Length: 506
Image (cartoon, rainbow, N blue to C red; front, side, top):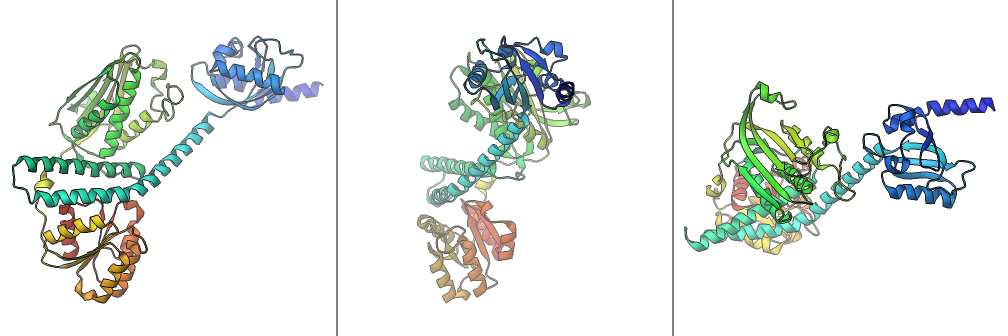
């Protein structure tokens, strides 16, 4: 008996899992050292004072579930619940337990003894896997719809550009069509952003005016926020340029403003968004983490919500840490925001007082580059010299508009919506064509298959491949096939003209 008791005490003291015994009054009567540490208490005596129903179980429903399970089955096995540490942190555990001998199950809580295994990290990893699978599904869905949607946009943009050349300058009709053109280009950028967001790997960065992105994001937010939340903005349009990814910057502003709105959802309040260019000296730069003196764009997002408690301030950028209720958020918003900003060479600082609101200050380094708005629209597309182009796409309306655009650029065009027919036309007279422009995704014969066949007939024929989803073909495949240029749909007349000129020149 003594040897058995010694083995139990050794197991009790050395186990990495929590071993415990409770009373039917809802108290712990014994906890091993691992359990005391897991719950965050300084001593066993302190841990034995807690009330299981109010200070241990994160929800009253969990307490009731434990009682019902033990009463119905006579045991608990791998019973998953959320429990509360001393500091208020919620952790997820797995309980295995049996009733204490002699417990008549007449109290408010069963007297049980057993083990508790912390599965918080395991649950986080499961959540990360699920999120990765969701992102993969989004990418697959985006790729599926992008081809058709980009074809539609290509037709719209193509006919707009054809129409603009037929309308006299500075007339109400031309101004209206130009507005439609701007809207169509914004739609094109939106599809590009959706595709970029769904991809893995590094995101393309270029010099951008962050002010423009913030203004657009706030327009979108206004329609989604309740009228009890007032939005004020103080954005210096003349602020500098940052080397950044537009989609990720938009994600930062959306995450910060959505969090601010959530903090004011019950009583309403004021959401203030400011953007100014600032210069940090060594002293002011020291208030941030990992950045040096120099010029920065400072984005400030402030709310008048409930604020952030000092106890959790240090954890707000942790992945999956959230104070929101189940279903209200994943805890990824601020973690993603912090990661994006740091990857851009900036930093995020937070100032908050409980009951008085929160301010997030985000810094992006300024780069010495000018961005000329509207330069692309003013540029004239380079013209051809009557070269013969074979154009093929399975979308008939896109074939029609492309044929008109290419003729307008002074090229001879043979166009069709069948890759098989295009191959036969080329086979009949390969010397008669100077360039082939083909879609990637087509029935019967894809653009890749068509390229292989064309290259067998005339190895030197230059080919431009168009696609609505550029991830569908790799750079290695493009080079191996001898494709001269890959264009992402929808393609405007300037981009098309430049690509043709570049390919023919080489």
